[in-house]
Each structure stands twice: as C-alpha cells, then as structure tokens.
Image (cartoon, rainbow, N blue to C red; front, side):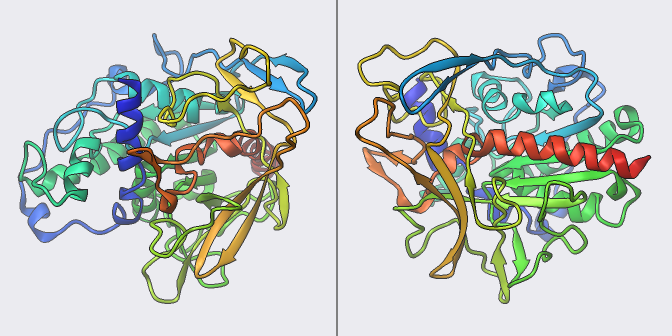
Length: 400
C-alpha cells in the first residue's frame, strides 16, 4: 500500500501547480455551487491550535549523522505561544476515488503535514485546513486522457480552491487577531496559493500582516530578471530580514538538470520565468541545505527504499535523519530553466550514506522531468524554518 501510494504521488504531485492559478471557465461558473465547508468545525482542519488529535502534534525527533558516522539526537518542541501564524495548503496526496477528495484525514494527509509542516510549529501557530482537492485518481485519468472518475461537473475542479478561500477567511475573522502570517504551500497547494494571493491578499488590509509566502514545488511566474510577476506587489525574498515577500523554487539534482520538456522550472507566459529563491542563500550563491529526511517507509518517496544511513550500522529509530554538510543548493538558470540545484557532496571513503532519495520513480524508471519534487520541502526544511524565524523577528520589530 505504501509503495502504491508513493507511485500515485509520483504521478500526481505538482501537476496542478501550473494550471491551478487559471480563472474558472464560464461553464464552471454556471454550474451549481457545491455545499460550502464549515470551518468553524475543527474536524475540517488537519492542524489547528488546541485541537484534539492535532495532526501537527507528532514526533519529529531527528538523528543527526555526521560525516564520520557518529550521531546525536535532536529533539523538537513546538511553541504554543509562537508570535506569528502559518497557514498551509498541502499538495496532491488524496487517495480517494473520485475527482475531489472528501474531508476525512487519511494516512496520506496525516503524513504530509508531518513531512512538510509540523516543524514550522517551533516558529508559528499552525493552521492547515482539509480541502476537497483534485485527487490522484483524477490526475491519473487526466494524464492518460481518460474521463475524470465519478463526475463530469467542471465545478468539481473549483471546489478545493473555494474551500481554501473559506478556510482562510474563517481564520482571518476568528483566529488571526492582527497577527503576522506565513502562507505555505507545495505543488497543488502552491497552485491554490498562486491563485488565492492575488485575489484575497494583495491590495487587501491583510497584506500588511504577510510575513512571507512559501510557494514551494511550483512554477511561480516572475518577469524575466525581476522579482515580481504573478504577484504584483509581493517580491521575491532577498534576505531573511525582508518581510512581505515570497520564496519559491523547484529542485533538481545538480547532475540531473531539467531535461527538455520538463514540467518544472519554466513558465509558458511570454516575458516571464519561473522564480528561484534559494532558502539557504536568499541573497544569491550557494548555501548548505539543511535537510530533514524521513527515516521510514511511510514517506512520499517510498518507491525507493530507505538508505542505509551509516554503512554497517542499523538505521536509527527516530522518524527523521539529518546529514549536515552533505547537500548544498544554488539557484541555476540554464537552457531556459530556473531551479534549485541540489549538489550531493558524496565521499565514498566515509561511512555515511551518499544516497539521497526523492526522485519520482514509475515502473522502475526515474522520471527526470520531475526532479526532486517529492522532497522539495524536506531538502530545505531547516533553512525554511530558520528563515521564517528570522522573518518573524523582523516583522515583529517593524510592527512595534
């Protein structure tokens, strides 16, 4: 089941990133509006401060493995009194059978917030709504040119966006209370945010409260050589002391850059290019990527076996592993693509693994055009959390 889920995720995650920001078709606008989701009911939230069975209240203990094979244990504790908030929209993970998912949190939704979101709880209070997203089953059908499963109603592809907008407005009305907020998305979730931010944030009073927007694993269009584009008034972040800005990147291995026809790293709009901001070096250049990698089979990249982290030793029992000094990242512009190039500094002479999983694999073949999409967030998690922490301090200093 885990491998099946991973294979499905490999086919589905990110496909909406480019298309989700498009306007509704006239036909969809004329369709009967689906029932709205009640976000006053905490059952419709994955993560919500004080919620019983909060999906973000999970074990994030990490084994930190040095190059010589020695290790230490890093514990984690969320801060319930964090001074800012994070609002998260998750990627395509639903294994429900129809076009859109239900609002029940299945293992796939629970796992993705553990991988991509919960660690931000050291810097912000976390809000993560369930939403009726476009499912993996629907994406597979679309990719194969088959009818969408269970529905021909075009409004089915809009209900997830409306859910997120409703959750956002509920959060602003009842929970925000003037606090700064970070918007976080990956893949389909980033696509939703690319559409929501211009409509619901830019030019609205809440824009003054935007600490930053993390638009991850998605092609965010910016004008060539500039820091704005689809977001007209939210530039790309150039330093961790900058607020009201955006961080966006897609990840490829340094030795496996985007091939011709890649779905990531390029946008179709004339005069535009895909944004790349390196969270390890926002001002440009190369920096160490502080990855938090899953240490069990219950991960998005489970189509590849968990590595032997230290040769000749049993793997640790913690849910995450960190490998300081092993990976660096740099934003690269090459052959019309802009992407975060992740270089693995392998050393066959030391006992630590030289293997980092994260490629999309289908039928035993690596799909090169996806890059390291499955671990876009994991590979830079430590950097992103650090940046959010620094931006929080900068935001609060300005707000005084």
